[in-house]
Length: 431
Image 1 (cartoon, rainbow, N blue to C red):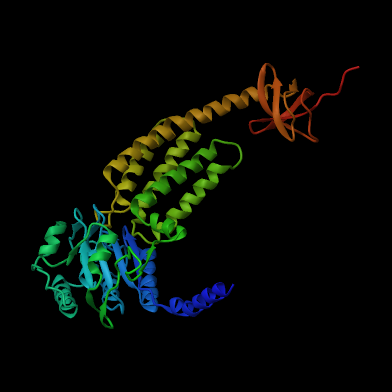
Image 2 (image 1 turned 90 degrees about the vertical axis):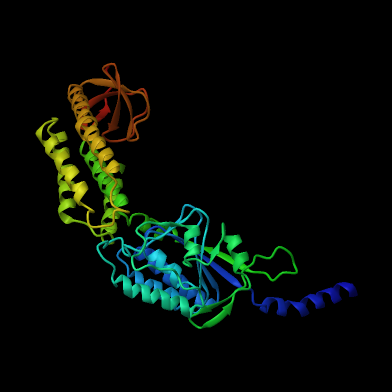
């Protein structure tokens, strides 16, 4: 008993010191794809949290640049951070172009994985590929100044920025990156113990993951966009907006061939709503979008008049023209692929010109047949509560009870139609 009390007292005596011990923290912040409004806000929030916690930040980068966001200002935010910020381009085949390249220059240290691509610098903003916000000479002076203040080797930058991505080894040779690391654990082991410059002065990094009790423990937190932000980020691209618009209108067109308004219609509305949100982020041509929607409306109109004629030809022409013009202002890196446009043009012809037309004609034949059933007597083959199977004139139909539920095996008379459903009521028993 006394031994147990002694052990408990020893544990209580040691507990406060272990609880108060400061464990170095590394936040691995994943930045993937175009840096739009959602990703830019997420990156700035994580930098602010890391500064409040005193954490080292590792930005796992795979990006072609910003999308309608201030690239230079975001890079300056990384440069001014009061904690170490390591930009790691990886794993392969990741890339760091445009603003992503500026992030490497602004970081306390930049690292690359084998097989990645670094550069080019232009366009900085994928939404406005014509020219950077600052001249290339001003950016060059800024980058050289960042390297000097961070005690990094001066990057080898020519007067003309590289027009294509350079491999990882070239980035190391030209002092764009300072380390090569194939994975996050490899990177953490290589930066451990290094002293780097930050916005608040020199800081020694503690990042190596402990493998035994004698080593200092390190808390590594992997951070990514939340589910909602991931969805918003996913739709903020020309390809996603295009897919949502085309599929959304296709779902609404399908509803026109059906009685009532069902799942396909609500799905189409949701898709179009997401596409509209994406259009608030991605610059687009309203003329191109108008032609695209007009083409879909003309195709739908030809379906409703049960023909495959002039309206279909005009609709396809407008569809192709709108697809080509809708996002012509953005960088070629994120513009719609000709293969995507061609595939959806053929798919639209088959869908509107044949599939929906056949569906409408089939529905009309069924409706005409059902009209001939009004007044006939049949039998329920299951309970109608209120809907169920009804056998009339040698065929099984869907029936709906006019009033109360009808048990199976009941003789019923067809009193009318509700879309493609027979409206029935029990037939009185004969004497």
